Every structure is written in structure tokens, then in C-alpha cells.
Amino acid sequence: MTIALETERLVLRNFLVSDWEALHEIIALYAASEFAAYDQPWPTTPDEIKQITEWFASGDSFLAACLKNMGQCIGLVVVNREPEVEAQVYNLGYVFHFGHHGKGYATEACCALLDHAFIELRAQRVVSGTAAVNRPSCRLLERLGFEMTGEGTTSFQETEDGDPVEFLGYTFTLTREQWTSRKSWQCC
Image 1: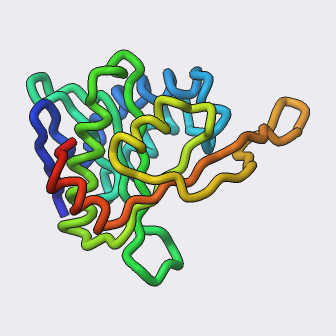
Image 2: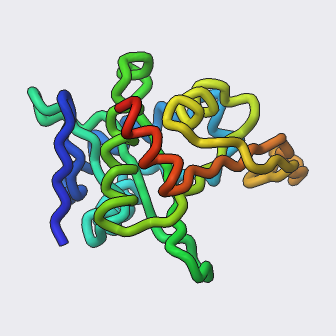
């Protein structure tokens, strides 16, 4: 299925294999950031990024967030079904180029993707998670109407000595009813 969601300034579309260079830059900047230690490690070599871009391009879950006026890929957003869950529960994720932070693009893209999840995919609930220290991500989720529904210590990576990099993580949840209610009084 081909997906193309338009917002005022963005087009969210299926990845193309040719997006690998833009994705490589986005991921390289993210991998060098202070927040990378609190996430699953991303592949970073050109060959690995080409492979993951091909995988993204083969499905509908990972979408390229592109500037409408230039076509430039500035981020990725994902909404994928939670495995082994009976209800229609989806997971929201996002990574944006650091040069485009603070301009509302992530909010705009995630709003469009949440509309898609709740209307087209018939999601009953969308969940997301982030490290407590990642305040920009926490603020984004709160701005979108998510509520913090859990916290816990977790680890996705290890130090050079093999010790886990533990951190406090938050789980956020947004229900269809919350989104519908929010959309009736405030559009993102």
C-alpha cells in the first residue's frame, strides 16, 4: 500500500531506496547525540543504512517525513502494530534531523500519523516510550495528548566494559477517545 499523508509543510510517504543518504545523515546525528544511549542501537554504516532503507521501503510502517516545498527527507515516523496484543494497539516512534528541531515538524508529522492510526488503521490505543532525561521527546508526547502510564528502569545498550546502560524510561499512552476528544477542541 502506498501512503502519502500531507500536512501544511510536510509530506509523509513511504520510504524510497534513494532516501538512504538522508536517512544516513539523520541516524548519524542521532547516534552521536546524548539521547542515543537510551535507545536501541541504530545501524550507522552506509551499507547498513542502505539495507534498512530498503526494508523501510518494503513496508508501510516507517514513513519518510519530507519538506513539502523541497522534497527533502528530514525525519522518519513510524506507527506499527504491537505484536501479540489482541486489541488494535500501535506504537509511535520518530527521529528527526537535529537541524530541523524546534520548528514543530515532529508535532506536525506525528499529528498526521496519529490521525492515520486512529482513522485508517482503526487503532484503539497508541503507545510510545522515551527516556525520562529526553525532555524534548517527553514534551512532544505530552503536546500530542499522550499520558504517562508507566515508568521503569531499562537498558538497551552496554558500556565498553559490558555493563548495561540503565536509565529511567517512561511509557506513554493515547487512546482513540482521548485523540477524538482532543481533535474536537484542539488541532495539533
